[in-house]
Length: 288
Image (spheres, rainbow, N blue to C red):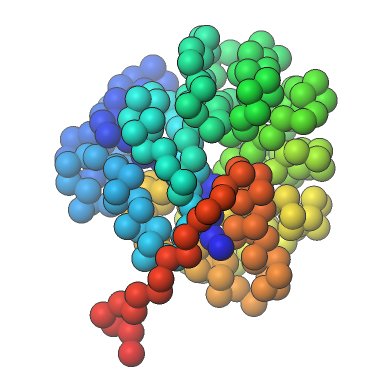
């Protein structure tokens, strides 16, 4: 059972970075606040990052379920994500420093904490309270290092039963990253690895330093608090979806028991997945 704890979808990209627009210009590229970036694989020529394409990648890689988080750089995708929700796909509403509105159909709430105009999380307790009252989870990407971990600990103490997933593996290549990992010492706080291949991109596949960071984090909080995420489709500009997973699957530095926890069992419990299929392995054309 494999579950992707951090993926993105959008029908039309219409976001912002540092107050400047982000939008598709074709060939998987975007105008990223005035700079041209390869935002998606180049074969996504229409700029649409759809659920159907993700599900095809999941089936090929043997991934049963996925959690769709959001980012300001893509623009609010609440409306589209409501059409994507299924037994295999959990969805997050995007918090944008204003009242959330009706979130009843969403599974969780995404907070881009490192991109907030006001980065004092104690000024943003409303989405945490809303999630706690409705039994939803929080998906949060914190600012680098320990800039927000003290505030997060206060919020965790206020809402001890709230499920919280800290993204980007604590921004693992930045100074102070371990302070984010240590938040998972709290009973309902978990760490997900969406973006870890981006953060170790200069080293590239099979990311030995990422494996070492995973093991170090497990030493701090246990493998039962860690979850795998792909950061699809952005990381697929450098590697395939399957590669974002199999550098862990093929590692000899992590036991099979701990791989099972990291790759799916923890996420199944945390996100409350049920009735997930196990995609059939299809031999590809280059395999014997």
